[in-house]
Length: 459
Image (cartoon, rainbow, N blue to C red; front, side, top):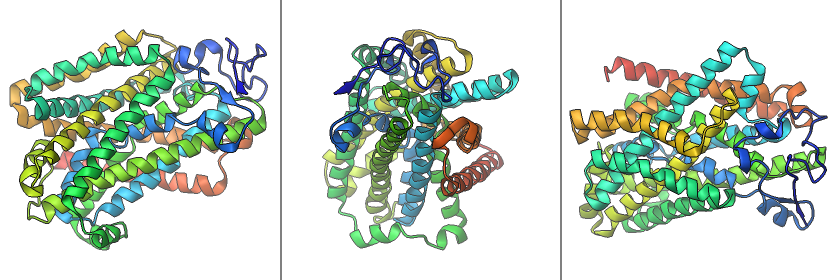
């Protein structure tokens, strides 16, 4: 039967999950308010029936790994160097899988999301600083989504970018309606958008007919990635722009939409299922990101168009190169689906961050309008002043801002995940911590290099 939690979050007992074993969450502090513990889980039935109750949050996480901000680097990498940089896509996905697995384990073990845990663990000034950085990361993420969605609207309907940027503010009503229908509806919407993206790229690759042997070899490491300065730069761009700080806050929050039990076996099973969920979803994100690069390699690199990094340029070249008017439509539809789904997860991450760090609850309307306003106003202003050609520069700028914020989310997560007093029996094993520390170090180094290169280029 399904496990139904009471109003206070306890498993029908009036008790709080884990109050005696490290959980510190009061019902009023639960991540995402009314969505906290709102999805029933099963304590019996087959393994797969129990797992299905946990299936969903991973797809909200996966969206962040295929949002419009990631498209430019994959397009540039594929058009300039063919399939060589598929290894960078694979490596970044492995890094993401490990970090999101830590998020799932951390959320189940502690009963906290990352924002709440940072507020608990650090002094008020440090906690406040982390909150500001997290908010900046969410605004930067939203900026990429605003620009990506506006470009998609222009490509599909001819809507000027400055108007498309303003139209994107209306997505608040979609989010409100979805959440009013239950968190499962939010997950279903995002999963549908991911499916649309995947189908669009599969269809485009069928039209492009990439060389299978060349694609497979691209997933193997190549010495040219290190010896060629331009390849190294694009590889760093793919790695550095893939893992987003808001995703770490998001995942540790939305795991708590599941009403899992507080006993050690139940928590261990919940951690296992949550990790499976995110790993499967991120595997799908890997296929989508690889498809973007493969499309660029087979359509642009093979035909001698070696410097395609602009979304509109890529869209305009697809029809003549692939010999089908359907190809650019599929590209634009996938971009629109990416922007719409990403905006949902950015809003949820913003809610988790604000409630976790400040214990401040805002209505979704206010929260969404404030966050989107902070992204729309500069985007519309710059496009009006400098023209539509500035849109791609804004996408690049948003990724650099995210690079600056990333260490301030990754480092606390890794440190806390290795804390036995905090994690209890679910403390990450040494081998996993070793991999996580190496990944965190690599991410910090790569993102620092990206920022240094960005500044030194004078952009």
